[in-house]
Image (cartoon, rainbow, N blue to C red; front, side, top):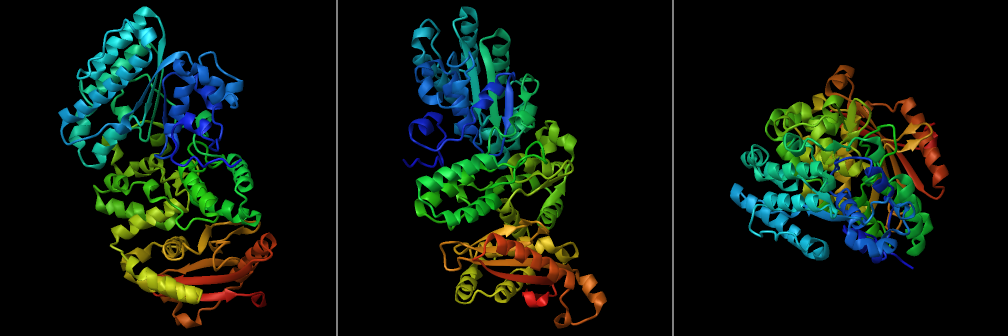
Length: 578
């Protein structure tokens, strides 16, 4: 029986009851029980809401009758803790709270949301809470909650498990819309937000609250609330919980086994599907840079949903609704155009950037968040950078590289989308690398400021050429960057989609670079530049390895010499060159 892809499904019960594919992460419920007041941060669209929903169904006393249905087949269902289905669950989702330009209106929206939740929970537990004072719908949310928790502490009738999903969502919106004065007002003094967290802290002290689980994206708000809520345990960088969200290779492979079988997908497409999702959605390491990299779960489900529906690799590999929000990038870096340009340029050229590990493992407030030294840390929490090693962060995958190039282009006022159609049409008639790279050089390289070419390298051309091609040839190709072989890694590979007109075609491209200064010292015409023997032998070994993997592939190999912004030469390599 075919199951469904849980793309966009954030309700745990819906996934279990609705015949969706399910990757079991329930063991982490057991691990979480050893942590008091955990705070767990991950980039947006990384599965936090589904995790909160799973905890809700596990701990909610009302759901006790469905425990076997919802959890019987899972790890935690076979190894349940004594706390399952023993609490009243207060599950907040602060992303639903509307913001405005008026502090009083934001406070009103917050109070209304929290009070409505409390009223609905009190109604659902009428048998236990029948003697509790009624919640005042228009009253202060913290006061209502405090009275409610005090009553629970006195009666000892039951404890409360508190879940706050997207704890920082609505205050983050204030930051991205440059309403910093409202953010400071909300997170300082005796504001409604700080008071709410004081009530939670008091509830933990009285025993009315069994535990508080908080998710979000950034640590700045929880740090600014420290004096009100200094009981949180920051587990974001804990090795125990690194794989609590996101999918491991083993989990993805098992899922693909089931999907290929259930949907009768062609078995000879499996390798290309695996390559594509690894390049586009894998690469995240939040704790141990030497450990296993994770797949972004929502982006992966977007791809798999379309793969099953269309029986082919999707044309668009990134859901536009799920892309990392460039408003955050602009807000973080926009205060200083010079440092912004330097930061984005370094990432576009190098794919990596140095970071201060001490800043990563400590929380920080908003005033620090926009300092140049914190840019890498900010991008780490937003999911645009991930750990390469203990000293450098890197862009995790092709999706994030494309977004970084997009911002690089915006900073440098590059808009060449109007020319894409003609290039695509010409390539469709004649798939010629020289034509394609000539168009890239004419439409892109020649339009960039000359100062950029004092600090570029092979990676700059590889990354920007990939970005250029991915916006033109996305219907026909996927791409590999730094694909591993026994003798090393290729720079860039074009892979014809198995179901499109260039199926079976694979290009291997190696980039070599001379700066403008280096080239001028050589004092030779560009057309006399010779092919280097070591470059030829290297790419031939890659070609041999690739042929062993894909015996039927039509492999072409190219070495591409780039000379600053002066020009380029392309050599197609055949075995006769060896």
